[in-house]
Length: 297
Image 1: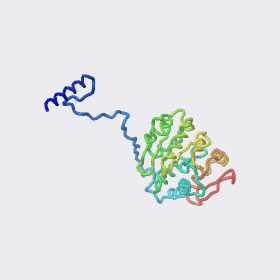
Image 2: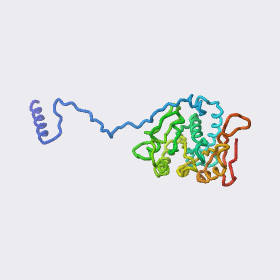
Image 3: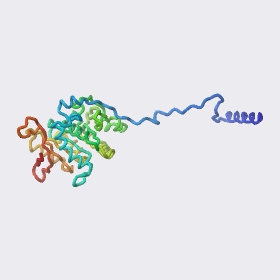
Image 4: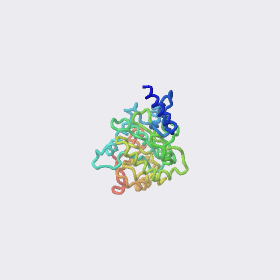
């Protein structure tokens, strides 16, 4: 037995002298440290808290205001949009889950409408909603929600190493997430019209079957970028401010988005009869065939 042990020890010594990597007696095996590029945890979206009471006081739809007049109006507005997104309408709507909210000019209530539409859809049982602040020249979604600026859309377009999950913000409304406009950039409008934006929109639209994505877009008559964005959308909500927006502006703006299969017009701040409160009118129409918007409400 001792001769066998001596032979084994001699053989080990020969192997060491030959350069083989052999364990030294008394050394404990060590676990390999993962390198920085391996086994990195997946990015987790950040969480933000919305002050629902403050939003309710500002006139927004919130989960704790299910019976408000504004909530009822947006229930009606969202229903055809969701039917189109789910393929339950008379004709199939490509990219029906991509919805752009826009207006002819600034200050007509498009951001207010986009936020309320997102809030209302977030109360649905079968959908989640992502609200994207794509008005990169004049972003207002984060400020309206009482949140500070944050990396977002522009950062994704500038750096292909940044993932969507790095910039998404989860909220205390379970089914609502936000994508801010991102870090201000001098070429923000050009980035919105870039191929990177087209790729990003297409990827976002395909990633989650149950997600409705709402883009708060720049006004149609002030930039050309919103027209490029509109070409990727399945549905467009066009906001018109009552007694302010000119009919010529509406007609001109609608001609720039003729390629979008579905356009819903929302008349903002329309007085209903002798009611003191302002509300919304809504409907479908094709200005190229009927000369104007048919009111459904």
